[in-house]
Length: 417
Ligand SMILES: *Cc1c(COP(=O)(O)O)cnc(C)c1O
Image (cartoon, rainbow, N blue to C red; front, side, top):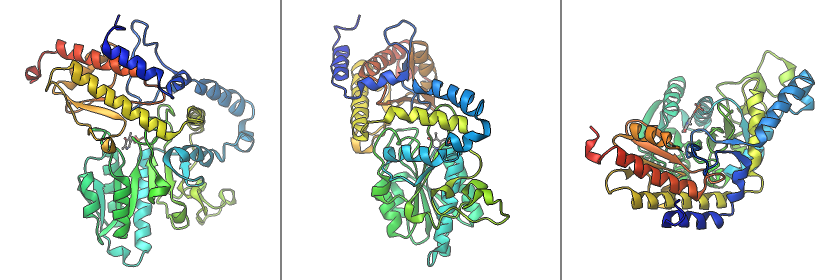
């Protein structure tokens, strides 16, 4: 019914020219043309299910666990899974192999990385005089909570600053800086290379949280000299609800990384079962204890959707999707009814668009009722995530048009008290 409209035509042209368009077939998604089916723009919160996952999980359960049982630790490669899967994530974040281990949650990995970074500062000349940890004041709350705990444990204080101010604030008092690569609420992309360089110039270590950038844009961990990084795998990496997170330990630091959670899986010889701890020489230092293998192996199957994908193409499409969305929202929605919190400049934009809207909660409920699934963040933010492997331009067009319809139903901007 909309085929004659310019927006739908533009979307069709963009979809026809999209080199990633065929990747959508690798996911379980609704059919956009079937009544009642939904457009999914919440992959920045929970990625869609890759088709390869269910059979693989069934095989892990029935064969590896059910029949091979304990033999699977060696014969099915369970023991090495954290490093093997880390090496699959590595190219997506610009890391050479051998620096990423998968396991635990992002929250736990923030703690490990931050305490580890401060302990490294302690070992540097004059490092114990570095009495503060700088954190991004707009951070996802869990990172901030854990930074405070890491600070208490290491005898430091936390100084929270707007992320754009961290590079100027870092000084000889700073032990570590915790930066979110992309702000989870506004979708703003922060200056990871610049902040890392500033931290290093002042002798501090940088810990990056990649939850909203890995799988959406180039990260360049090795290239930019990032010391430590963490991220989750259930957002743009489609690993499934509660899928394990990962931690990146820069190769040059692995011999010095002193984990605050040195479990037996991070021991040099786990089956030596010795009372004294001796850390593994490599990235296994980032491990703690027995990993959640069902989730981890589901993640491994999910990562096959990235085979042969160039992250530069992902970034190009991500920006094209968010540009198109912003243009179509401007076209359909009366001026001033919503305001984008997401920067216009590509260099400062992640892979979502956040719209400030006074009655956002009711508007998002209306959108979901009409088959456009984004999410809502208090107090008044509508979030729309663009996941380039499976979001189409037709999805974006429908979302913008439906948003305008829902806003019209909910009256003018002034009506929201
Ligand atoms: C999603 C997200 C988390 C989630 O942490 P969990 O431990 O997986 O609950 C942490 N930090 C940021 C920046 C996030 O976006």
